[in-house]
Amino acid sequence: MLGENIRKIRESKNISQKDLAEAVQLSPKTIQNYEQGVRSPRYEQIKDIAQALGVTEQNLLMIEGNIEIDSTQLFLEKLSSEISDQLWEISVAEKRIKEQKDSIRWKTNLLKEIERITGKEVEPVDCENEDIPFAYNEEEDGVDIIY
Image 1: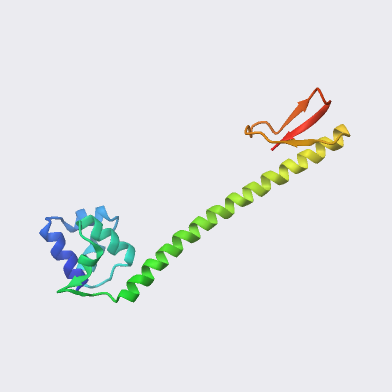
Image 2: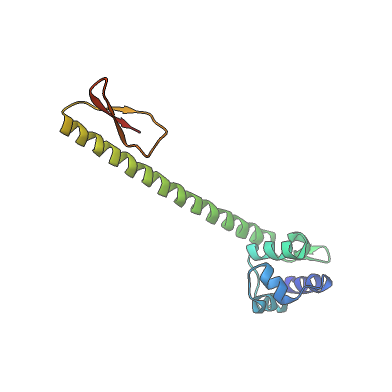
């Protein structure tokens, strides 16, 4: 039983339930429930508990050479965790894309407004300095928008 393995390994290393709970950011009651078989940890908790106890996940799951948890379930939980991480990364990327689109829209509107005010065509200019949205070019008597 997984809970029994957690308890045996924890006790063999003289680690209290409270110390293990703190190491894996769970409550001591949750660790107690795992050890008593009242609750079963999810894959992420198994991974964290194994790391805190200094053993591999496989060692934590072993009972006399047999894996206690169905390997398919473990695989699905790991896959679910990875998908969740990837979805978070996608949402961050989507936010950055929206910010870039908003920036381009703002710069395009600024370009149109400067052209309307000056009556002259404005040429975009590549520039690393994003603090300066446009620059006046005296030699050509025009305004350059810096992207």
